[in-house]
Length: 85
Image 1 (cartoon, rainbow, N blue to C red):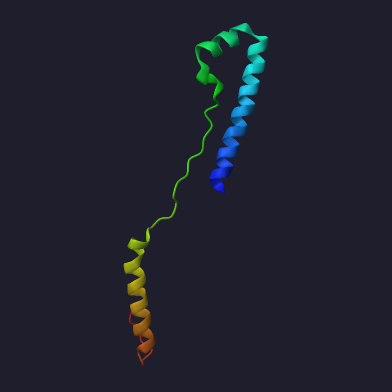
Image 2: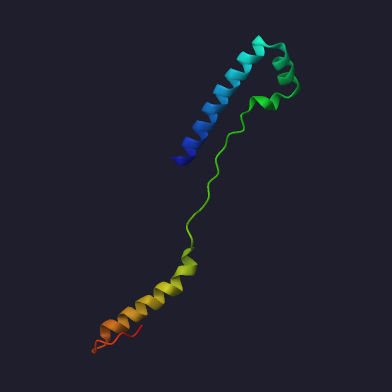
């Protein structure tokens, strides 16, 4: 869903930018000459970046969760109300 949004937005901006550039080029011969020399100027160079902001992968969290569960089990099975961990 997010990648569809990014693709659609990039496409829409590109179409609007190309229409504006061609409108300007039709009214100004200098702009038309520049667009013929540098056709990549029609592309607005709009894009998105996706970053994984999750701090840990499951492999790094397994030991902490395991130790926490062991401490919890020891606390539950301990008949006294002493804290083990």
